[in-house]
Image (cartoon, rainbow, N blue to C red):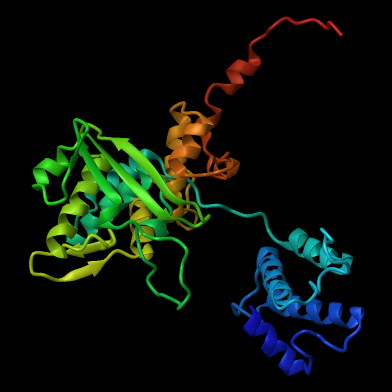
Length: 342
């Protein structure tokens, strides 16, 4: 945002640090910049929400502070709240913005259908395995794929690599050069997310194997076995897919979105209140959290598996899911006698 701010100042004839201007003039310059960001004339080329505007202003102010200048959004050093003009502008934008529509959790049946039937090619089968892994380990899509297009900006998240996966059998580690049958027979698996979006490093999640084909351990086994014999590099990301003829493809975030929407159609979700614009790769993390919640797991367990450090996980427990309300009306209709003892 600093580059865009400097371009804005050059066009308006301002100093980048607004030197030589009164407080009112500095406020007007920042507010004008915020309006241009909001309308898309600066930045993304389309109208953006209040969070994007607030972020742009914050990044500009951070550059001021890093260069030993005052935060231009505040009158006094150490002042907690923004000055009133900025508060009012952001509040106005917040009131104008529509209510957010998070991606919906998909039912386990949809994830299972993708895992079992999304096998039109080696690449599609790998997508199905990564969907399974993403669901059981509550992964963000950037933790097991790479974006279709890199924009030159380094991401904080480190996607899962082969060396981040461990297989266990009766408490003993299985080496990655084990036969596929041995890896598929592992009784548990552990992943380590080296770095994630919220900055938390070295988080581990462990899962036991499930009976049947729908299993996080078996899905990881197929990915690790394929990568070991395809590249033999322990730093290879799990989204790499090697075929018998030596060709290589990579599963991108867009592939996961396509698979989720394919599964939604095949599993009949469109007849159950879903629309395709409300499901995507984000639905997998929500689906995992919902599956744990609906099966009676505690909030602490959900936070631990999803590597949440706060109650942010509650945003993934969607109130639109009817199963959350199962039996509530019957409980509320039950008469219980009570008296006022106050």
